[in-house]
Length: 188
Image (cartoon, rainbow, N blue to C red):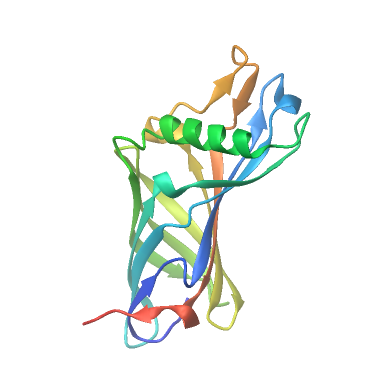
C-alpha cells in the first residue's frame, strides 16, 4: 500500500466502484445477480514521507448508481428493468434522506506484498459501522480493494419480493480498482 508521499485525490479518473448483489430465497431463479456501478465517488489518500498510508476518507453519491448488468434470471434485464431496480435500490438505501455513504479509515495494516487491510467506519443510511477493506496489489500503483457490507447492520432491510420468496442477500460485495498513478495531488 505504498504511493508517492503527499495528499492524493481519488475518484472515477483513477478507478471504478462496483457493487455486486446476489439473489436468495425460494424464487431466486426468477431474479438477477446484479452488477451496480457508482460513478460519482471521491476521496483523499494521504501518504506519509516513508510511503505508508496515513489517512483515507471516501465519499460515495448513492443517487449516481447505475445497474450495469444482471446475470441469471428467467429473462434478460431490459433498460426499464434497470431503471426500476435503481429506483428500488435508492429507496431501500434511504438515499433521499442519506444521499451519501462515507468511509473513514482508522487503521492500516500492510501485509508486506504491497497490499493489506484498511479498517475504518462506513456511514451508510445514517448509521456508522466498522468495515474492513482488503487491498491487493494489481500492478505498479494499481490496487484491487474488496469488502462485504452487511445491509442489516446499517438498518437497511434487503429487498424482497413475491411475499419474501425472492430476496437480495444481506451481504453486498464491494469492489474497487484504483490506479494511484492517475490521482491528482491535492492542494496543500
